[in-house]
Image: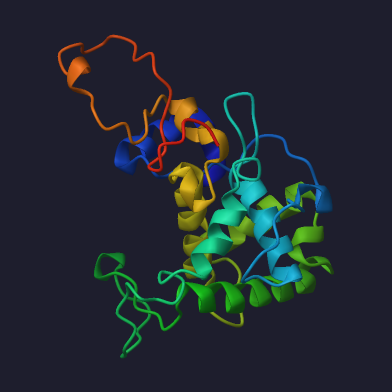
Amino acid sequence: MIDTLTRRSFLAGAAAAAATLTAACAGSSSDGSARINRAYDPAYFTADEWAFIVAAVDRLIPASEEGPGGIQSGVAEFIDRQMESPYGYGAFAYMSGPFLTDLPPSLGYQLRYTPREMYRSGIAAADAAAHRSYSARFSDLAIDRQDEFLRSLETGAITLEGPPAEAFFEQLLRNTKEGYFADPMYGGNRHMGAWKMIGFPGARADFTDWMDQQGRHYPYGPVSVNGSKDR
């Protein structure tokens, strides 16, 4: 369960895996519509879908004393921008049938949904399920109820009238992780806050001067692929 991990321990393992991943469902957060970044106008998500994404991202990576949260880092913007990219349209996935369920995870993704379709169908189904359980859509729930609902998606304890709950949660969690640690040029990792938190130097072109200085503190901050040192 993601809420049994501390931010620091989870980040350490996730960063070692790919330097693009992390999430933790613990810590404090703001609530309601105040979490929405009103300076960004989503290109793909509707207003209701955007409210869901913002609320979910805020709970998956809440702000804490150890580092910025998903909202402050622009993760919701990253996800929206990805939906209008080839990735969002499923360009990098095999999308021809047969589409099978109940197969081992080692066989990879087997569903018919592109990322865009997964979010559109999954958010509608999740909000409908939240309304059945709590008489409110997900983004309007109290924080503890949001955590409870996300946990039910993660474990498959709830059935959605659309994609499987676990598959929808996995899509959301994976993209949230990616947006938190992706290069800022893609919309997330604003001001390189996640990189700074773990000491990742980013896309610096040359580290030859430091190859033989194992254990010495690296004094330079991260750099984006586009050359920016802070966004």
